[in-house]
Amino acid sequence: MAFLRWIFGLLIVLIVVYIVCVMFYFTPDTHSSREAMTDALQRLRCAKLKLKFSNITSAKRLNMKSFTQEVDDFLNCPFKPNTTEQEINRMRLQFCCNATGSIFLTKRNTAVNQTIPYETTIKSTYKMNPAIHSMLPEDFPWSGRRLGRCAVVGSGGILKNSSCGREIDSADFVIRFNLAYINDSDVGLKTDLVTINPSQIQREYNNMEKNPDPFVERVSVYRNASLAMPAFAYTYCTGLSFRALKLLHPVRPQQPVVFFCPDYMRTLHRVWKGRGLKVARLSSGFMLISTALELCESVHVYGFWPFDTDLQDNPVPYHYYDQIRPYRTQHRMPEEFVRLLLLHSQGALKLHLHPCSSDDR
Ligand SMILES: *[C@@H]1O[C@H](CO)[C@@H](O)[C@H](O)[C@H]1NC(C)=O
Ligand SMILES: *[C@@H]1O[C@H](CO)[C@@H](O)[C@H](O)[C@H]1NC(C)=O
Ligand SMILES: *[C@@H]1O[C@H](CO)[C@@H](O)[C@H](O)[C@H]1NC(C)=O
Ligand SMILES: *[C@@H]1O[C@H](CO)[C@@H](O)[C@H](O)[C@H]1NC(C)=O
Ligand SMILES: *[C@@H]1O[C@H](CO)[C@@H](O)[C@H](O)[C@H]1NC(C)=O
Ligand SMILES: *[C@@H]1O[C@H](CO)[C@@H](O)[C@H](O)[C@H]1NC(C)=O
Ligand SMILES: *[C@@H]1O[C@H](CO)[C@@H](O)[C@H](O)[C@H]1NC(C)=O
Image (cartoon, rainbow, N blue to C red; front, top):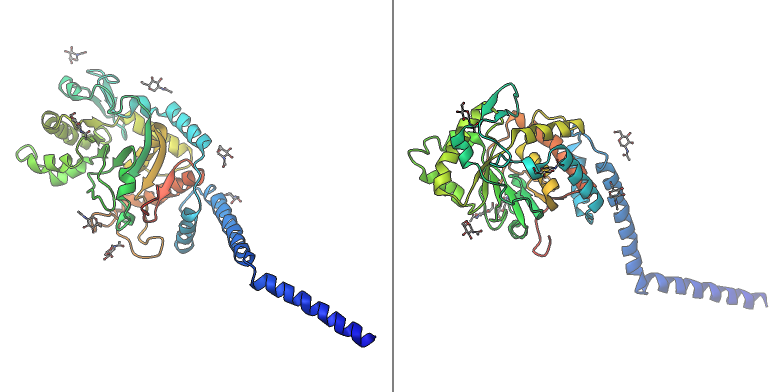
C-alpha cells in the first residue's frame, strides 16, 4: 500500500512538474508576459527620467556620460504633449512679454521720432528716423493669427545625417537662424522666419552696396521668409541692420527685413532670469523658442544640442554646416539646453535629437 501511495505521489509530482514546464516553455503566453515585464520596467524608467528632468535646474556638475545615456533613453520614451502646460506657458509669456503685439517693430507699434532704448544698455537710445520708419512692415508677417505646428531649427551638428528634412518641412511655420544653409535631406527647405546676425554682414557682405548679388542670392534661398535682425541689441548692430534693410527693401519686397523689439528681448531675458536661467544674454535660439511657445499651437525643436558628442557618444560638429568651434561666450548653451529638457519633460514642447524616421512627426 505504502509503495502504491509513493508511486501515486511521484506521478502527481511528475504531472505538476510537466504542467509547469509546459506552461513555462510551450504556451504562447510566455513571450508576451516577458514583454509585459520589459514594458513595465521601461515605463518605470521613463517615469523616473521624467521626474528627474522635470526637476533639473542647472547644467553644472553634469556627468556627461550618464547624462547623454539618460537623454537618449528619455527621448525614446513616449511623448505626451500637456495642453494645460502649453496654455500656462502661453499665458505667462503673453502677459510678461507679448510677442503677439511686440516682437518686431512695425509702423503700428512704433512712431516716428520715438525713442528706442537699446536691449543691452538702456542708456543708449535710438530716435526713430522717418526714412527707416517708412520701411518698417505695417504689421507682423502672420498678422495676429495663431501659428500651428512650429519647427524651430537650431544649427547643431546633431542634425547632420538626421534625415529630418521632410519632417521639418511638414510643419506649418519654420524658424531658422543666422542664414543657416538649408538642405532637403537633413534640415529641410521651408523657412518662414530666419535671423541674420549683424556680424555676418560685417564679416561676409561688407561691400554689399557695391556688389549686392551675393547677399541677395543668399537671402533669396529662403523664398518669402522674413529676415529678422536684432538692430537694437548693441549699438554696433544698428547701422549694419539698416544697411540690410535699405538694400533689400526695394529688391526683395516679398522678404521683409524686420527688427526685433529691444523691449521684448530685454523683458524676456529678465523673465527667464527670474525663473533661474543664469545667462548673460539669451541666445537667439532660446529667445525664438520662447516666442514660439507663445505664438504656436505646438513647438518642435530640432538641432539644439550644445555638446561635442551625440547620444551614441560619437563626435558631432558644433554646427551642421561648418567646422567652426564654439566661442567661449557660448558656454551658456548647456544651461539653455537643460531648460529645453525641462520643458520637454513637462510636455510643453518636443525636443528632437534622434534621426527622423519617415513616418515620425
Ligand atoms: C528636486 O531637486 C531638489 C533640489 O534640487 C531635491 O532636493 C529633490 O529631491 C529633487 N526631487 C526629485 C524628485 O528628484
Ligand atoms: C499637465 O500640466 C499640469 C500643469 O503643470 C499638471 O498639473 C498636470 O499634472 C500635467 N498632466 C500630466 C498628465 O502630466
Ligand atoms: C499684446 O499686444 C496686442 C497688440 O498690441 C494687444 O492687443 C494685447 O492686448 C497685448 N496683450 C497683453 C496681454 O498685453
Ligand atoms: C520728428 O522730429 C523732427 C525734428 O527733430 C520734426 O521736425 C518732425 O516734425 C518730427 N516728426 C514727427 C512725426 O513727430
Ligand atoms: C545635405 O546635407 C548632407 C549632410 O549634411 C550632405 O551630405 C549633402 O551633401 C547635403 N546636400 C546638399 C544638396 O547640400
Ligand atoms: C554622415 O554620413 C556620412 C556618410 O554616410 C559619414 O561619412 C559621416 O561621418 C556622417 N556624419 C555624422 C556627423 O554622423
Ligand atoms: C511669395 O510672395 C509673392 C509676392 O508677395 C507671392 O506672389 C507668392 O505666391 C509667394 N510665394 C510663396 C511660396 O508663398
